[in-house]
Image (tube, rainbow, N blue to C red; front, side, top):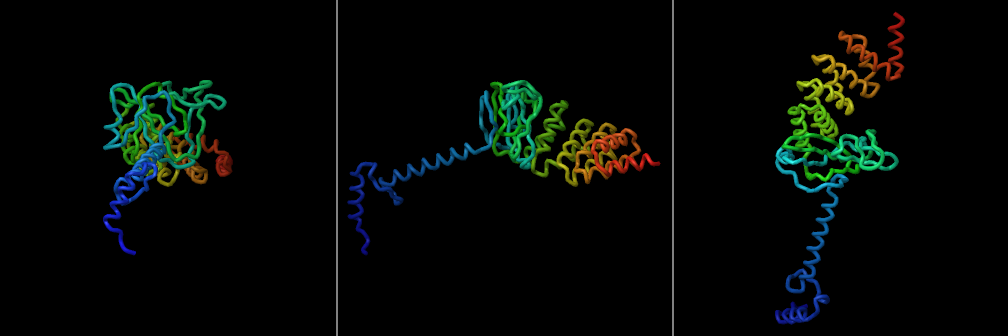
Length: 317
């Protein structure tokens, strides 16, 4: 077959130009008749962008002046402002962890961010949490005023939240390392126990192992006994060999008896096959009487045959 001459191509182009736009044949080779195809491609790209935006995780939010912003630099430079406002971002957690919302009776539940902890959006007021299971993403929310973080709360993305009409900035693409680094610095610089507890809980929910690293550092060396005790508690919820070692280190070496007692409780939260033998050892050998009594108490609460056998042995002497 002979190739078409330039004259033939020109005639074809003039013919296409005379046809109604709806009847022109799409072409990838350029020219006037390729515009409908290009328009379709552009429209498809916009549609895909809209789908991607819709699939970006964000909280179930109402009554907020909402803004979405991409993460850049570090969180300290982005989470700030003089007027009261909320900021938030998503973190990955272990799927199946239990995440709390606020319960309001029947099927009505949700939380007013400006109403205090446990305040419901609808229904009867209650501080009792309900559990939302099966998610691998949580929202870390921070209330800021005068460039200071005043409150930190963590919710499942499904939990209905009322922002009280305040500005709410949702930061996308926050790396786990940036979140952990920021939260650890907040703990180190804060003087509010309520503020500290929120940051420690948020640290404990990170799937990334750096969250455990931060909790261990805080449990070992933070100057606040409250922080060390709370870090031990959340370490126990994560269990694992490294958490167990940090808890035992606190029982043996922490200078504060209250922290040692908190560590004994944290030990009791580990799986029974690990917790019971270690509690028996503390109850048998611990020289600090207050810490020893805590070990006895938590052994009594565990209803384990090994604990009963230990008690019988002591009573028989």
